[in-house]
Amino acid sequence: MAKLLELECESWDDLRVNIAKARKRLGGDFEDLWFRGCPDHAYKLIPSLMRETKGLSDRVHNQVEEDFFFEFQARAAELRLRGLTEWEYLFYSRHYGVPTRVLDWTDTLGVSLYFALENWEARSKSKECYPGIWITNPNKLNKETWGVNDIILPRYLGLDSGGAYWDFGEILAASGPWGWDGPVAIYPIQINDRVRAQRGWFTIHGNDRRALEEQVPHTVVKLILKGDCIKAGLEFLRLGGFNRFSMYPDLENLATWIREQKQQWMERRRTRKH
Image (tube, rainbow, N blue to C red):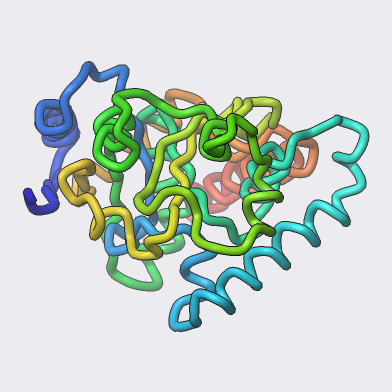
């Protein structure tokens, strides 16, 4: 099995060249690629649920997952009248911070760059670290882990031998292992404003709780952002209008973004006086 490919990007040109290298390694066209930005390139492709339950037995892990999911479903009164499937509850819970077995991806490089460089100025003052962008080809991933060269609708993960479709909560509550082992790329139903704004997609872990890159290292490439590449990336985000409100389109984040923009403007005015 091929080793994980890691590529350093010291400049914007390096980023462009290395994305082309990633596409060549992963196959398909540029439009087939998914991206995931991380504030620290050392972060592994482990879903938040698996991070929370690290070191715990499978039995305890499963109980924790059930508690997270069913309590969110029970208490999310705002969602009750929308007629959501349990898969859709899962995607909502992920985007509002509940630990789940899914990882967020995007088909837009700029979105992944935003999450890699979010709050970079403040973070870079507190510790030395380099942001990263993961790249995968979901078709290649699923060919390896699901046996199909395509992205999977979530409901097909719950298809049993009798032709019945199990919703996510039914799979979660059933005893026994999940119906798949490795991570699978899936289509989220994009009824969530955040998913749409972030051009979001998901991979979902199965029975194997290890990081995606440890299970199938040849299906991902890691880019490590450094030096002038970070500076150029920040300028790209500014010019392209990638900001907190464009990523999280709700009133709370609109207010936060407006306040932060005005604070930055006032700070520049103060600096000019000295």
